[in-house]
Length: 91
Image (cartoon, rainbow, N blue to C red; front, top):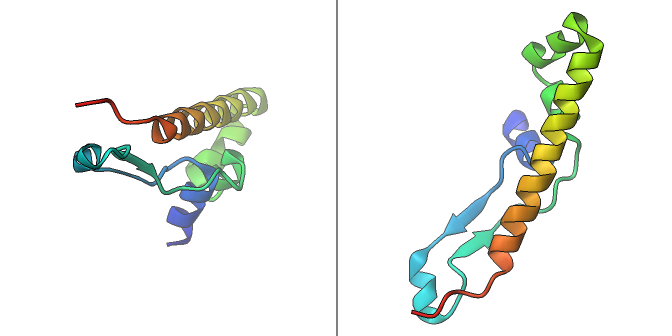
């Protein structure tokens, strides 16, 4: 349970609901249940040994991969936040 909570807290796993029936009520079918990420992705990934091994294999490569993972989380969070804030299309 601790790993799953950390994945959500880091934004690596987003929690959302999509219900197309909400459009009939004039509501956005996309509901974002996750809050904005509270911890860096690096903190979550270092909970597992397979990611800790990256540093021993190459510190520069590990940093680049972690930076890329953080950028991915930030971009995805912004996209999902945008989608959840949109008004539904007229049907």
